[in-house]
Length: 391
Image (tube, rainbow, N blue to C red; front, side, top):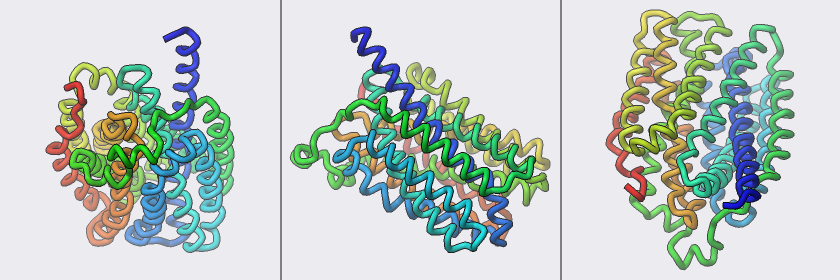
């Protein structure tokens, strides 16, 4: 690789990091204010779960289309466009919650649609960079996402402590996110995908990917880890406030700690993956996440619960990014397979909020989180599907 090519690849890598980071900032900026939105709308846990379901419904709508759209328009155009749509949708959520549930649900649906399409396109570009570098770096891109979520969560905690209204806080965050990403995607390179008319002949289309056993097993694995990650994002602060009796700002800090642990796991994960391979590392992390979740649920005080949240976040760190990387092992078929795996994984966001909310109404939110433990156990059995082709 020439010096010019190396410099271009570094610039592209930085651009991909920016898109991951600011998607995380956007998500956490909203998630950090969920308790205040819940209180303003007067929602029970199950009702909140149904409202959050709108995000997953939007994502599930966009994901089957995302592979086709990336093929047609490229990841650069898709990420840039979805950044604008996402920013507008979150701003509408922050304004609409003052007027009732309906505008929030509509805005969150659009937010979910933009998130799903952005996610697939961003991961396709990240897989291109990973292949050109010749080493496992996908989880570090997702670490960038986690860095963004930590920054967004800490800013959210500060905003709550300072009494900054939800609308002002989220709208400012949306403007920053949109501007940063629209500039960053200019550094993307062409996707390494085959034309759609050829992919149909070679069996690489979206419908063919839905018939591949390995792709479906990877999708189920990602589903388990997506529920593990999503449950922490949606419910940790609520559980700390309602079940452990912490203040709102303290609950948001627990959420930030969970995200910080995920960031650490994603940043240092590539070294472990390159040395030991995907299967043993992911098995260990599944066990770690399970232990952390149980400590969080059954911990006798907030301090112990904080420790459980940290282990939970560490355990959840690599499942989603490594699943995306495994789905993209063959470059020509990457968009279709990433789209399938993301579609299955995002079902966790479709079913997770109402399930945990329903259990929270009948027990507590903390006890409802035990539903996640069963899927973590299943994920251990599914890890061989993610084995690297070379292994």
